[in-house]
Image (tube, rainbow, N blue to C red; front, side):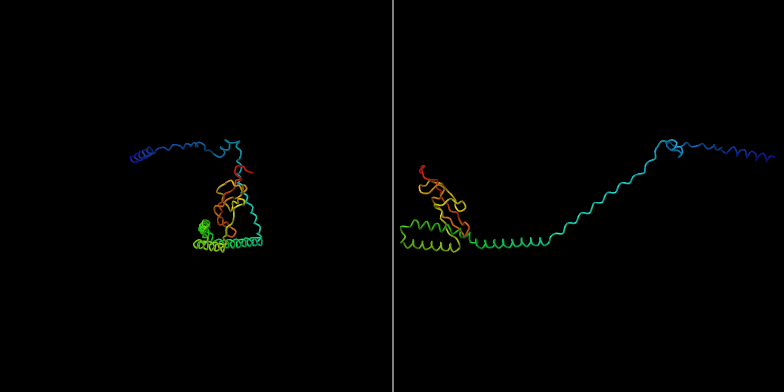
Length: 213
């Protein structure tokens, strides 16, 4: 009997040690969450979203037109004509170089000619003097050499003023030369073939002095 009482006491103590488990309580849903049926019920008037439209593909640019075939015969004829003109121009420039290569040295000789001419003009009264004859011989020889190279003097007195060949240094009245024409030539002009080697320095007449007619 005593043993049965002890078992009962032990069983009661074991039952008293077990903690009772409370019944499960339902967990409330979080804000914004809910069942699919509830969501549909909450949004009865919401229209279905339209399907997203795909962006239109850009149009491909049209192929550029191919350039027309050039006229090769015309281009060849044009190139040939340009080359022919170049050869003619080069030949003309080369000829001018040869023709006028001595221009600078001839221009430097002209002051010597001027000084000899001035010396002879002041020695007219002594033309029989051997020294004067020697100067005259040198002058004539120099003029011939210049002429052989194509250089020759030209006269200006009594002619209209030509600005391409003459340089007017003064204007003076003249009883014999009409107005606008050259009355005095202070330095003679020279030509080298068809080009001006040196312009003449001249005085232009302004008409008769004192308003004479």
